[in-house]
Length: 359
Image (cartoon, rainbow, N blue to C red):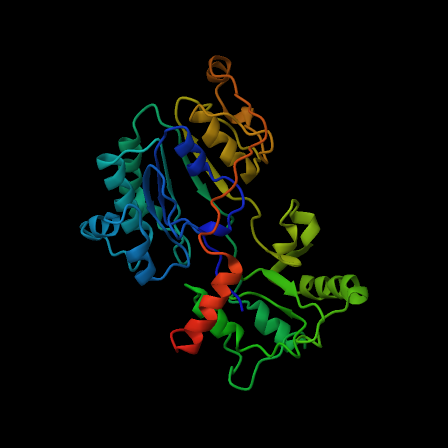
């Protein structure tokens, strides 16, 4: 049984929760793992892997979906860049927040010429005292490479007789994920890639229901061999082991191997506002610096256990001198606890399957 991660699976305090505790407002639009929507002072429109039906019921406040769906040029069933920017501008003008965050997940590159007018309205709505960050992940061309198809061709993954090799596809909720996972023959599979995450590979460990999985004493050798074979694929630049990229108490939940595609490994960060240094030349900056920038420019303290630090090299020295970085002890706050105990949740799912409501 697989399931899509939800907001209650976040095991640390989010930025919008931290703002809420400080009496500040946040607007969060189309962000993953925000369903069920956190009950914060502000607005939340969950996104990424949320079906239209769930989105209609899952916005916060409850009347937000109706308000946004009534906007001209906005179709919440197809939340691409332009309608999302219309939503952002509307909320910034009508219900301004201290922090507004929008994630765009269009297919293919964004047409910045088409959305330039919307971005100008966003900047205008934010005002001259706001910090604006535009972040783009690295652009890659996978040439329609499918990790699962490659694994199957090389004997590491086996399809069931009914799959016809069509396991990859759109995943909006747990039912989609399990429908696709059911097309894999788990008794003969050693490695697989979740359909919703096309560059993370999980190694199947051997047990009673996975006889073809890897025993502990063969795991390292198998990973090394698989990394070498994947590295020879034209569109792949490098394959990373889990421990090379991830650390912390939830490291074991990360993929065993991560594929890095060929192409630019650098994303783009454009910034503006009174705190930013003007005319700054190109510099490398890890994405782990984004959270510290947001907290710093909002005047909030940096938790002592926060990964990343405030990148002073992109900030105006005069601003930094008059606005020293504030630090706090490690955050003791935890994420919201699930309303349903996991064991009780599984029993509810079992009964719903028995009644025919779930597959």
